[in-house]
Structure formats: structure tokens, C-alpha cells
Amino acid sequence: MKLAILSRAPQAYSTQRLLAAAQQRGHVVKVLDTLRFAIDLSGADPDLQYRGRLLSDYDAILPRIGNSITYFGTAVVRQFEQMDVYTPNTANGITNSRDKLRATQILSRHNIGMPATTFVHSRADVHLAIERVGGAPVVIKLLEGTQGIGVILAPEVKVAEAIIETLHSTKQNVLIQSFISESRGRDIRALVVGDRVVAAMRRTASGDEFRSNLHRGGTVQRVELTPEYEQAAVRSAQIMGLRVAGVDMLEGNDGPLVMEVNSSPGLEGIERATGLDVAGAIIDFIDNQVAFPEIDVRQRLSVSTGYGVAELVVHGNADLVGKRMRDSGLGERDISVLTLHRGTTVIPNPRGAVELEAGDRLLCFGKLEEMRSMIPERRRRRAKVRKLPKEPIPEA
Image (cartoon, rainbow, N blue to C red; front, side):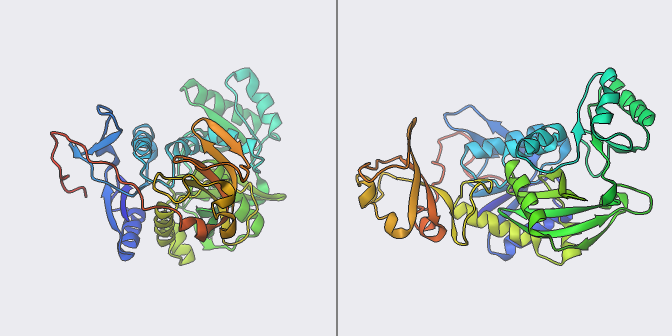
């Protein structure tokens, strides 16, 4: 696999660990500065340049997009997506997770437990908003704060109103959230990779500090999650469109309360707290997805081990072309076709007499290994005739 890690901090712990994990597994990997890309929309197909030269082929990218470059960084990720380069975190997923209001709206639509939250603009609505989340104390959050910055605990209503009014006067948008007193300055960070939690730690705030972030002096320890917490973390990440994510949860009296889903989680704290090779798990997942991309069903199906949902494409030179469903052999391989997509036509539960054509897309449920064996070698971008150098300059 040829992998590009998009990062502006090549010497950071997380970047170095991901680089080392990929190299140890025999992959070709480079760290590319996200801001040195140029999006090329001049030709018939989407493309990218890097440091002024045509970018070579990559099988996958791993975005490590910082808050300060979200707009440009997600544009680069989106361009890679248009070029059929695999990314575990889509541009939309990264964008959704960065906006705390948008993320809260999306998660609440899917019945994810969260602290009671309100969002208002008018000063006249602030007092009622505070009452709706249970009254003081309340937590006030800037929409795009990170590492505990922009998170304020207001002990009284008047103090909360004054803080919110001040922030509004500086054109800042804020969320008003209930304070979960039973969490006692603690939260849980679950590192989700694909459809499982690969590591989890409990973070505890220092002294009177209510924010448990390591950057605020918090301490960490390994924790084994209950199925309830693990399911909340995985579902939250997948609902946001992220296959690699750090999910922060409070330990509420009635179960997990999701605070945030981070699309570029740091690895240093959780690897040292757990002693687990989180970077290796991320690289292994990406490698597997490059060979066999799965459809994200966001845990809407309860599946047995070894079974799952995936999309199979009927290629022009495939044995399936011209065969009827009953003669396709899929049933004998324990593969059920749920839906057949042909151009703009959708055929649910296609019956035995339906004849398969080149270009058909089959949404299937069945044995993953059987479906994996039917995936052809990954298609490469076709070469382009340009007046640019054929070989890129060193990219790291």
C-alpha cells in the first residue's frame, strides 16, 4: 500500500507513530504538508499538485487536519475522494465534527446520549436557554474550541449571562450545556477504528479544574469499556462519517453522554496510558479497506462475526455479466443481494430472473471473505499527458 499522511507537524508524536507503524508493515508512506497541495481542476479529471509538481498515485490518505486549516484541508481531502483515493475520514465527516453545533445536531438526530444543549443568538433568549438545560451551573462552549480552550464553567445564572453576552459582543457563537456533576471532572476518550474501540482511557482533571484534557494538566489511566460505552463511541464516529476518531464521553448516571467526536485524535496520551499499538491498528484498518472497501451501515444491522455488508461492482470482464441472479452462484457462496443499482434504477431484492449487466452495483450481505475474493485489483488513475514533470520531487 502507498499511503500519504496529511500533516503539518511531521515531527509530532502521532505523525511519527503512524509513519513508523506503516513502515514496519512494509508500506510505502510519506508525510505531506497539507498546505503545499494545489487543487487542479483544469483537466477533464480531478487532480492534485504537490509543491508545484504532479502528484504521484496513492492508494490511501490519512488526514491529520488541524482546526486552523479546516477549510483548505477538507478541500484537499475532498479532491482525493474525487480521485478515488481511500480516506478513513471523509471531508464531510471532518467538517461535521469540527462544528460543535452541527455535530450535536447530527448526533441528536440519531438518539445519541449527550448533555442537554441549547443554542441561541438573542440576549433575551439566554435566561430561558439556561433554564432548559437545568439551570446553573452551566458549561459554555465556543463552537470551534479545541483542547479545552473555549470551554467555561459558569456557576451562576448571572455569571453565565454575562459571559455569553460578552462572547456574543465579539461575534462568537456559543453552546450552552448542562453541567454533569456526577462525572466529577472525569471523562472517557475512546479511540474508534472502523467498527470497534481499539483503546480507551479515563481522563481526570487536576485539582479544581473541571476540564480533563491532558493540555490542562489532567491525568489518564487505561479503562475497559462496557458494551454500552463502546457502542455509543462506535455509533457516534460512524454517524459523523469518521472511521478513525476519538470520542469523548462523560459518565452520566444513566449511561454515556457524548461530548465530542474528534477527527484527528492525538495518540500519545492513549498509547502511553494503555500500552497498545493504536497507530498500528489504524494502519492495518486502512490497508484492509484499500483492498476491500466496506459500506458504512452505522451499525443499523446486527451482524455475526465474519459477516457484513459491502458493495460489489459487476465489471465488464467479470463472470457475472449476462448471468441471471439464480445462476450467479452468489447464493452458494452465502451472499445475499439486498439491492441492485443500475444507473438511476434501483431494484430492491432482485429476483432470480434478473440478468446482470456490466456496471451493476450490488449491495450485498454475506460472508466478508467470500465478497473480498470477488473484488478485483484496485484501479489506478490513467496516465495524463501534461507539460509537467512525470516524476514528482521528494514529498517529505
